[in-house]
Length: 159
Figure 1 (tube, rainbow, N blue to C red):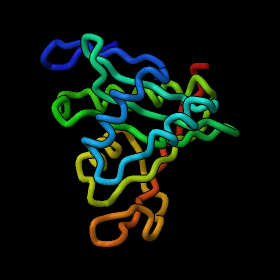
Figure 2: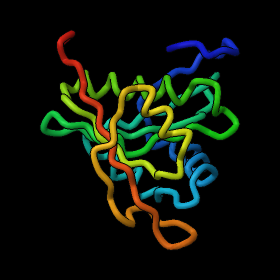
Figure 3: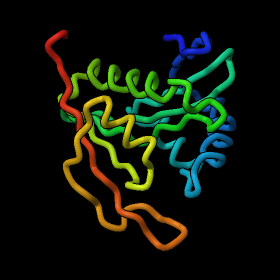
């Protein structure tokens, strides 16, 4: 747990099937091309790290991380628009990085839309570096948009 500038405390807990109605509301509100409920169900039934962020028991975000063969892949991270720009995204991302370290991943990868300036600034501030591009990766209203592939080397020396 950590406090944001408004002194509200965000809490992280593992996602449960019972959370999916709230998760789906957030997913559809925040993304033009949201994940389906089935994708979340599949992730919950796998070994993925599926987490939610709560303020006073209200779900304000969700994130999913896949870890295998000492590599982590941040699959999804979402904070409700009404709670953005308060530091919760940074806190959530740091939590997910900690989860990757706890699972002994050496590196964490993610894809991000080049048009997502806010996310790119956050990832850059945490030390992520662009390692490539995936052409026409994301659907968009004008066809498809590339994805920037970012990576962060993780420090396992504290384990």
